[in-house]
Image 1 (tube, rainbow over the protein chains, first blue to last red):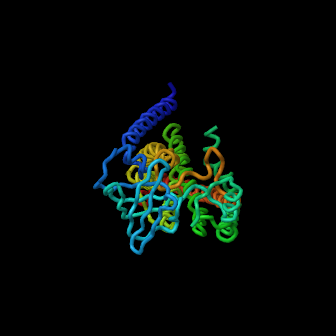
Image 2: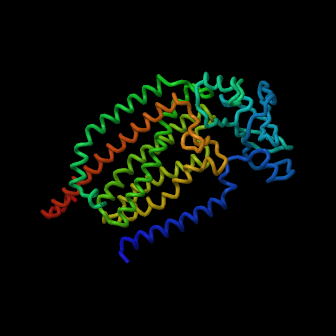
Image 3: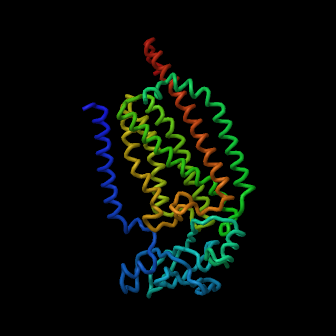
Length: 148
Length: 243
């Protein structure tokens, strides 16, 4: 066999073995790579556990008409359209925070409520000028994310 | 065919003609791209003016990945066909890739603070991009770490090839796992989800960055070729202290 092709073959073999190994590692670490759980996933994973001492992150949409902003605490619910979790947060909410917006909250679970110490906004992959967004919502083509 | 392309003299002949116009066109694209991205493109319905960071962030990220792919392919050519020009190309690509991956991380961080509310999170997309940056650094370090240059070239090439595995992870991280980073807006099955007015500056910047990288790579390769020639001459004259 031509040594060039032998080297190419070895390279190909090594790469496929490495690829497979990486795939297995990533599969095993799936739980740790996920940045957040949705409320429904949390329920599936922990069942009816009401208190979780370790920090967890919960992501989803801010449930409409659930936001109460008091002087030093904001209360709202995160939903994935299946389950909701109530969140208590003392601190500054990100600019993009609004009803219907995707967010990720980090904190501990206490009595089935998330006492958050950090709330991050997640924006979607749609980019358009405000006029286009308005027109799309008006014509009913696109639901949009509810504005303030 | 590779031999035809890989002949250093032919390489010089072709690139000498290309070089000046390449830089001029690259600059033109970047200037127009910057003009459109900063002044003549609409605000985003959600993010307002902060969306303009995208016009640097996204092309940088694409180039960082694309340049890594080129670096790895040229490393394969070096290891399999043992052509020295392939190694020169790899080491010429590496610093630009490092720069673009750094630019991606920095602009991403600057974008993340106002939009997400944080400079950095350890989600899959951000972490895999950081790993890409480390692969670039590792390649350069390993390339220079040996007394015998061939050893450095060989081990760095092996490292570059291992790093290929990271590329699909970067690309698909946002689909495979929940991440804070949003999914892809352009390379997706149902077409881009970016308004046309915003795609224009994005593509201008993209082409500009590509041509700019190509220009720098060519200049780097030529410099390295001259270096090699000097070394050969010094060796012939038996002058060791310059080596």
